[in-house]
Image 1: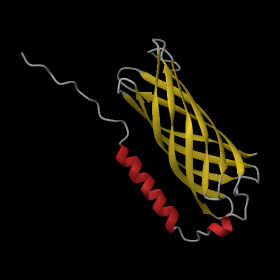
Image 2: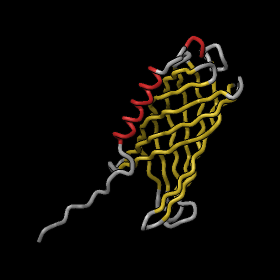
Image 3: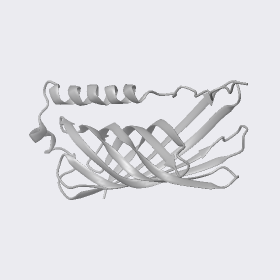
Image 4: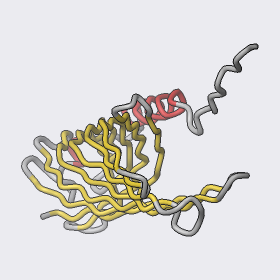
Length: 196
């Protein structure tokens, strides 16, 4: 009598792809023609000790043979620039998944700390990358689970005026629970940032 080894499904997104993408973005930012950090700081880009409030959202629809999955994500960030290039802050992300499909609704929340390093392009644009750490909590109706979460963010921020910016933030998060099980999420958030 032989026992079959459990099958492990491949990850939907490879960690290598994200790492390679981040490295390419970093290289492009550092070698872009016309890059002038001194000029960038003279425009509406935030300076040292300036506080920002960011609001963003993402929507995901996945189809599979078993079921369809929809989710809506909403995030809030409160950050400050401790120097022109360095941004630190707090973030919170909530998800309501399986909006219109089986199995039933699942609610998830993440919160924690973030750091971003910015490269400036002209007077209105910056590209950033950095880690995020925190804690996750999820509830699918059968009980709550919590665990440590870590990941990376990279993105683009375009200032529309001296007080409002549009931002795109691809975010990769890994959540580890007490049982050693983990989930990986890659989502692209779109939102606005307000200078306080």
